[in-house]
Length: 137
Image (cartoon, rainbow, N blue to C red; front, side, top):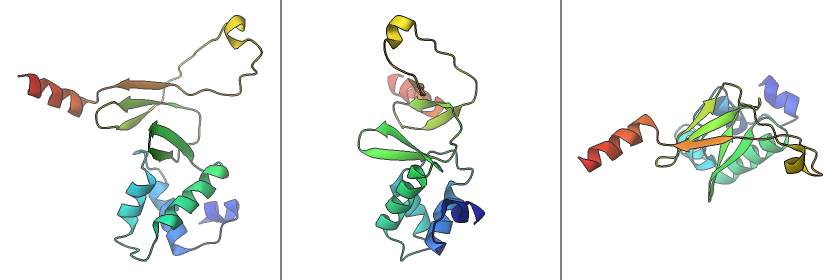
């Protein structure tokens, strides 16, 4: 509740529920996944409420928006700098906690002032890898 107050948001049950759902969530959920999960308890919650709340939280730096799939944004409540592993089959996203150092040469940087970067590793999660192996047998 203090987090919402600090963000200057009106404290509604729906906003509190969205913030609680995101708190410590490592699944990198989409707005639709959040909506589906919360409408069981809050049947009058609209998709617009979820989208608008996520937009506000993103704009105020409380969540990071991830563009992992072309038509679906995902949200990461961990706003500390980190990278991701992404399954190309099921789209599972996992945080990479170890440091990954990338150095650009002055020639590559040219006249850019680097202000940040994100690294995404793509592959198959264990479950999808097993499914693929079982299909080929």
